[in-house]
Image 1 (cartoon, rainbow, N blue to C red):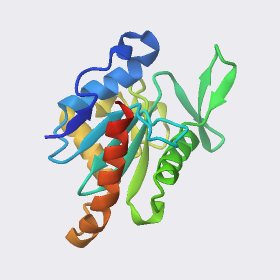
Image 2: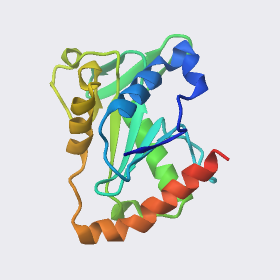
Image 3: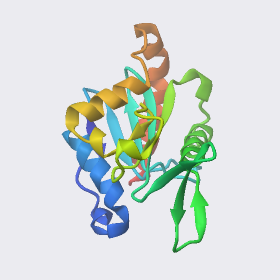
Length: 185
């Protein structure tokens, strides 16, 4: 069974602005993620400047950073953008997720090249048909929130590592888990 941090629904999910995060968290709680998987919400280790929305550590696969966008995320001119009218800015969720993961690895002095990892864009209020290119393992939409569908989507991101590679990455994953668990103290 997966372990969640925090172990209960985060109280900030009562805010309407975090409805997307709440939907993803509830879907992950219901999904059969497997033993040894750790799921962290909004935690960053000491020395990091960014907190991932949702970070999953899977001892068989590696690290998955899920960048959640509760609003509309558009794809045009070769890139994704979320427009936030109240802030008059556009956010590139892929760049945001990649920078967040790089910052985490750097803060913990980990070699990113030696740890299998993936970034995912979660747009839980959007339908898959909003994107002309069809389904992608790197994009979670409303259709992917059913437990088995979400698990299949996550498992498609990274292949199961060979036993020798699992042993090699175990220390790094334990270091990340310890840093993120400690971050809540």
